[in-house]
Length: 181
Image (cartoon, rainbow, N blue to C red; front, side):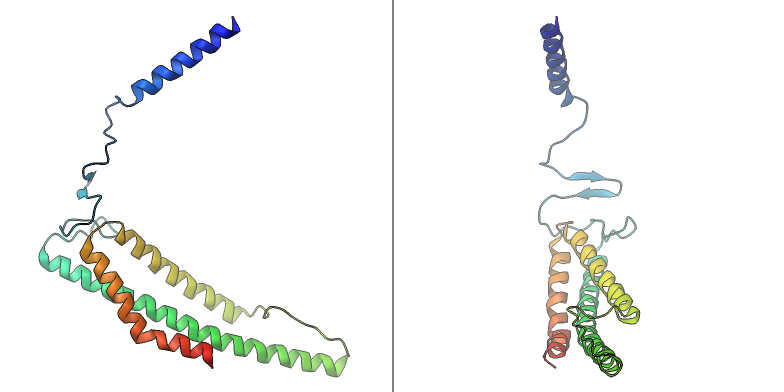
């Protein structure tokens, strides 16, 4: 009796799996994905009409494509600027934390002969909250770039990569110089 019940369950599950691909859904990955306002091509292309981050941002003309590429280029410059600002501020915060830590150790030496050795800088709200905000901004821009690249539109990808490269040329030296000083 128990074996026939198990056999029945296996047959029913197998039948459901066999009928699952005939439920009216097209799960083919060969063509374009149908969206509310157009379609998304699953391969690299130069055609217009892809959604860029929002449903309302769908460049359909050549001018709109150029404007979108310029906007993405500028956004990539902003991302590299935020990265340079973050690197400069990290160097500044590190020096400030060392000064505060040495001042604290000097005060402790005069009041008692207890030595405190710290492996990490102290939590300073002005530094750490600002660090978190800059990291949020940089990560958000990175995710926006990722979503834009996922449209597979070559013009968008080229604008982002070029903007990141130009931004690194313009602002990268500030971040590397901050770590050297």
